[in-house]
Image 1 (cartoon, one colour):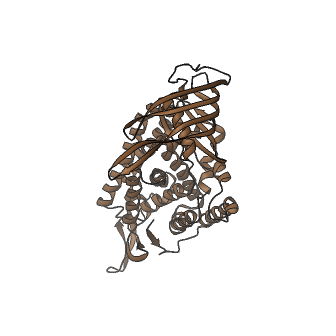
Image 2 (cartoon, rainbow, N blue to C red):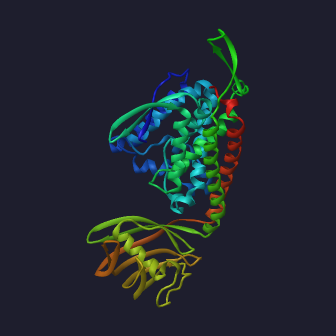
Length: 451
């Protein structure tokens, strides 16, 4: 984030905030030790990250918790802990430590649910991408801070070309501006950041603050303040968010709610089984490993990024071999045992809008599951490479040289009815969080604000 808040208050007693910072830092040291503390190791990422599609397995639910305490690299944990330190102390001293801890953990879990529900907006591949970080939980703390201290003055520094421009503004301005950027960036599908997890954690923080707040905090729309003119304490009506910020915040929450409805409707498109493949190729002594994700509706959700695995898998996809078909129609798609194959085809493919006929030879063993989808392939593949040349605003597609490589393709996992089993329950949950949150912002902002 290019705009950073400056500490303006020491806050009250906040042992949980300091404990969370220490625990997160200690865990980062453990999971990044093998990479000189610069970034998390792949082994720990595989073990503790949150992968939405794993929600179908009860044994994998622990990831909702462990992912909150792992960070990608040193910058990721630094900025997360910085924001937790700035905003967490005051929220904890106001709510009490146990209520604050409950808000923190529940916001983090809610953020993962929002990330799952909104995966279809960013693309189904997000259901398979590991997510880590305390950002969702900290976003919940930010949401609580907004409702408690909407009119509090904050010092901010905006870095423009590494030159800081510092000024003061209200917490309402900064936090609603930040919330808006998360939603906008999420709908624009920018970068690899889980923006909807941040936005969901923020909304959950507002909801949880009102739900968990001690009784004294919900003491009405007036507070007691010292009046220097009368030299006495007087009852003052709390300002709360104010009409402008309240209207904007409600509009942003409704924009999230619309996304929940959209995800619920579009989840029907991913009822078909989804196959996750591992692809290993060897060519000229070079070994490449990669992953592909295929939906039986005919969609490649994720293509391999490495050159040789991508070439091999695209040939299988274009030729129809993923679903037991072939240009010659000779394959038996329900073979439960690996069967030999030695075929030569010329396949047609549309690349950059151009139809190309590609030579494709495959020898080895191939196997399909009961649904007629490729389960296993081990053999040798020879094919023509396709070269794409950029010519201004147009492209030219040409066939290149023939190459030969050894290929091993195996199914790693199969997920059925992901839309109904994962996305729709997540979308319903997010809607059930957002609707009462809108009511809280609309009717209760003055009641739970301290200033």
